[in-house]
Length: 405
Image (cartoon, rainbow, N blue to C red; front, side, top):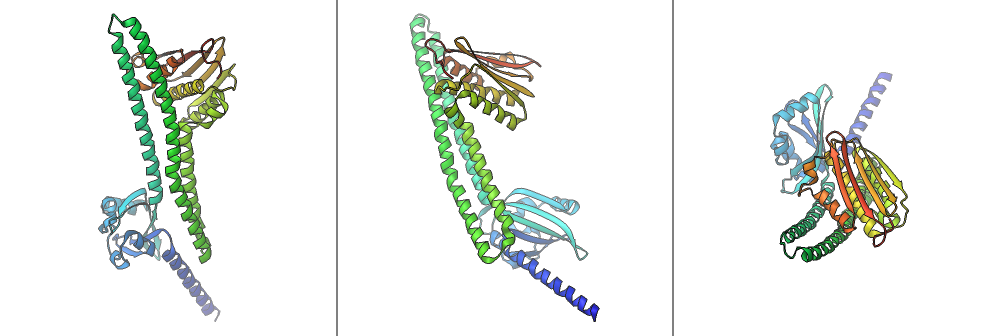
């Protein structure tokens, strides 16, 4: 009698477990698909997946995965199926699909092979990441727009430089015309730099506005899901809510990073010295290149024009180090000596080639020179193969020059 009761209890527990599993399977907010590991034919699909793809349960059963429209472009390869059979696991972080109704969706696709009652089965978990993908695309599109506008401003500056060179060749009226032209071009260059900073600030606000709606919508969805689950008693789905929260937080962090890169608030609030300290630390964290900052005699008062120029020069120099220097260490120093500010950016990389220093298409170097010229200063760039590169900027701060940093 005891054995019979034991078997009965085990059978009841198995039935209860099956009911719990089936309920989770049918109410899951991720798509779940089961395949026969030998034939690759679909043996079951939950309601969420049916709704996501637009296929009925009957249309899915017995089909090969690659016979279903949404998966034809990705899963049609039998080699991929054999890889899954061999490695027991396959994953696609972003799989573009087209539903039966020709709607475009993006999903995270994870497939595992395991054994049930002596038979191997394939379980595919399919998560809809369309909202996250669209938010990332909106962010990328905004970044491209910024790059295009910066390139347009740079082209205007290059055109201004060409005009100046043409006027220098005219000869007879060189003295008077060159002086006037230089004045006009400096004013234009200064105006362009000012417009560029204004454009950065404006685009930074646009990024917040564009993505603000997406983030708000995602948070509203999170709130609705939370209330729905709470009312239905599905506390076990809290992991899904935490994942959505992580997605929202990741997007928020990305927006803040882009806004900071365009115009860090510390530059306007505290001046160039704290801004450079932040810039070097952020550069080291993002690139892994060891950064050192040395400040001597630089006070914390602020002048917008000079502070912005110094910050952008260092920013461009660090960008060149990251892209071209193959360096492991960079040192930024800013020192106030007598009636001048001395700025140096020194790396231990491969060293800049002389032809690149004077190359007319080196836009970063051109931009640095233009900023320094507007302040009546000088810039010198030197380097030898294997000995690194030194960018040295001298800006007067005496009579007629900006005196505070």
